[in-house]
Length: 271
Image 1 (cartoon, rainbow, N blue to C red):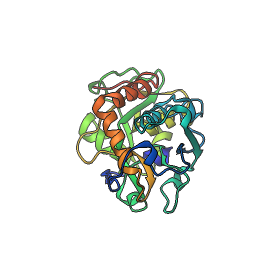
Image 2: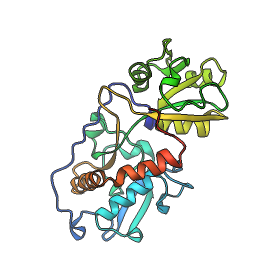
Image 3: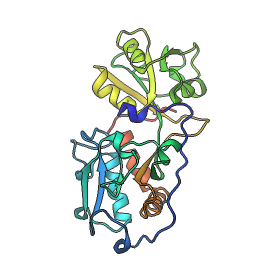
């Protein structure tokens, strides 16, 4: 997951859907006729999925996948899941799924080998601190002004610290993310800023007794976005793009995000 989430500062996110195709359910080009086959990695981490079971409809990406499936005309029992390792999902060549959903950032390099829908999630930044520490209870960005913040060099997170938090003292910049994490563990810094997917991974698997203080939107530059991934030239891409667009315009996508990434996941918005 960390590899998926930590985008370089110059990562871009302009999707290029395939040519328009009919989105009538019976005419969709499917891997298995009558079934919508969705790929993701295993284990399927929270809060993107719940209980390592993509088929239960719980967790942000599982909920998004089923909402897209519904837009395409499929019931829940017409959806099947297949395990696709993250790195192989965007490798060139034929796919054994109709689309893949796995916190995959849209980038020009990946678009040479696969198709993406428009972004279904714009990656936000997160502040991670140790439980019970001075800044663990912060509820606003202003409360972080005096914090000693660690961040990895060359990342969107560093840009976000400088442009949005604007701490009173320069952040501690580390060549490797693991060095920033070690500094947090050793209490050499008050908090680290990483993108939200990485923040979930840090608190779940890398730093005991740590918490996500909150999340915030980065400003400036091209936002990093996750997209639904399909085989290059897939006739399904434009339909996936339309489905995501419809979910955005109806407000359903925002509701799913609030439920799984803000509420139950414990990552409140820092204003």
